Image 1 (cartoon, rainbow, N blue to C red):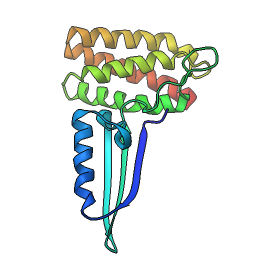
Image 2 (image 1 turned 180 degrees about the vertical axis):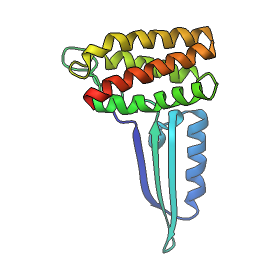
Image 3 (image 1 turned 120 degrees about the vertical axis):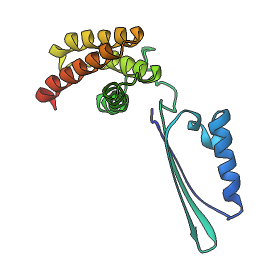
Length: 174
């Protein structure tokens, strides 16, 4: 369930423009084939070098969601991501929530929804701060309510409460 996709190849110089056209089409109209996860990108990094008459192309795409479908276990349940991978994924949405709330701007719904969904999943992992999960859940509920109300000051306070909960837990478990 990786969010990364890498393309590394040599092209004829005249093929470079076609590559960028296909990439632009995938971003605009949805990914396919070589660009399967590009339409939902979070980050694109492209390196192009001219080497001895050939073009060396390296492109790395980070998708907002896993490119591969969810892995289903033998019991029919969706297999949870590794805790470390989940925490890494949460870091991006949380960073945006904190920054925007402190700048006096309401974060996008997608960031709030992603953070809350990942938070709900995170508290199902035993042994990573179970004693903090209840208070963390209450802080997440307040974040959701603050966002839905559209009250910026309330949103700021809710984000600060989450920062506090994270700090308490990480002081003991990180």
